[in-house]
Amino acid sequence: MDCLFCSIISGEIPSSKVYEDDLIYVFKDIDPQAPVHLLIIPKLHIDSLDEVEEEHRELLSHILLKVKDLAKEFNLEKGYRLVANTKEEGGQSVAHLHFHLLGGRSMQWPPG
Ligand code: AMP
Ligand code: ZN
Image 1 (cartoon, rainbow, N blue to C red):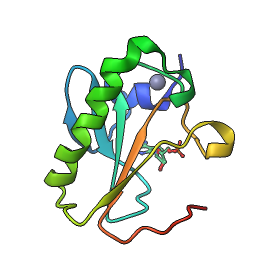
Image 2 (cartoon, protein in one colour; image 1 turned 180 degrees about the horizontal axis):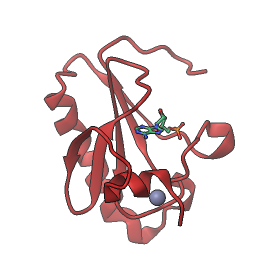
Image 3 (cartoon, protein in one colour; image 1 turned 90 degrees about the vertical axis):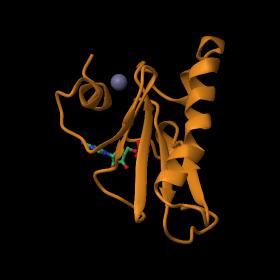
């Protein structure tokens, strides 16, 4: 399968890696929208949040439980935002489940 983020996980396409374990890979977004802009992705290819199943429960928990560690590492004690753009109207451009961790500036609401 031709997937940009699978190619990043395999090392075929270079990335600025921040963290990696058996289940997930974290790297810096190539087009940062905030002083800190990380992408947290599962190593398992899942198209989007709309395709997650019961069998992914542990993986999803693992991702969410990693967020505060990353926030601490990047000094986001004032706060941050976690975003999962999902499918066309959600603004998803890469069809491999990913969570944006954004911080280092005040966020606006509502998002565009
Ligand atoms: P989304 O639009 O929510 O699907 O997010 C995809 C994100 O991937 C965007 O923020 C892009 O800037 C980012 N992106 C695309 N290609 C790369 C790359 N080669 N390395 C790092 N981030 C990338
Ligand atoms: Zn993939």
